[in-house]
Amino acid sequence: MRIGKLKPGTTYAVQLNSPKKQGFRSAEENLPLPPTVIVFTTLAKGQAIKVPLTQPASAPVKGKIPLRWNVKQNTFARVTTAVRMKIDIKAAPVDPSQGQGQQQTIDQFEKYVFEDVHELVENGKPKRIRRKFLDAYTLTRDPQTRQARKNPMACQGKEAVIEVQPDHSVRVVSPNAIPPQAVREFQSTKFISFLPSRPVAVGEQWEITGQQLQTILSLLNARKGRVALKLVKITKAPAIRSDLAHLEGPIELDLLLDQVPVRMRGRVRVVFALALGLPLQRKIEGKLSLDYRVTEQGTPIRVTGQGQFTAIEETAVKRAE
Image (cartoon, rainbow, N blue to C red):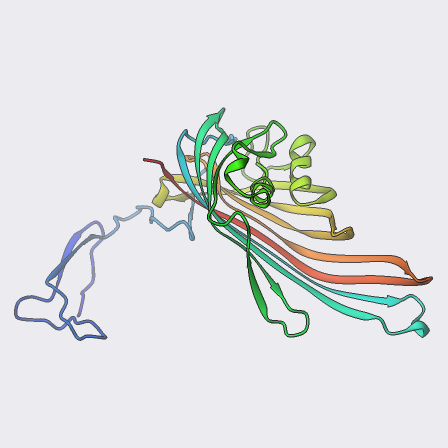
């Protein structure tokens, strides 16, 4: 099908197939496409191009912008969270003459898919949420065969009402409705925020401090750490009729994983929908390292390791019926 040069700001109609001409057919069954008319309008000169959420166009911004949670009552959110940690560890005697030591790879992955209905909202923040886990599992690899094994979590397929506490922890309101292990998994999440406490301009940076920082450290099992963010840019997302704030900055954490001290140095990225008043994406990725000494049966052992950590949360939102 040939199409000539199109004029800006003009509406066109193209017909595919007719009762006599049936050249457009399905690839598998060779069935003709029913007569179809496609109508479209070309952009006028100077008109902004509407782009999808994954490739937003820059939006002009003047002054400072308040970045704050502003969720509406009965907002429905479908959240997908995936966490991957892989680290190669070597344990060897400090004195090489006492042996070569051993090597081990820890490779862990966990994924949650759940649906939330924000039944009670105060000052734009959800306080009571009806949550249903559609999928929840971990993947572990056999250290010898490297084969992956999927392990469903107790919360998979379960539904409960949870409340966000003043310290941002989560409490299950009706624990008798689900198994004890599922209660612990429901309560393992926290309501966290990387947003500034004041309006900020594009290019402005802020440090996460106080209770806000403590909540992040608690969620990530960190003893101490530092998080700083900057409002990088504001973009448009016509598909959801909202401007998006893109935040990015360094994150440094001293983790305690199974009583093992691990350092993480990386970046945190947040995409926040201003019209919806909540984040659409939060991502943390960084490099892991460890270097400490223990004594086993009188022999000083040095344990070292390098690895990678990635955690990403993506949210799709609509108003509940």
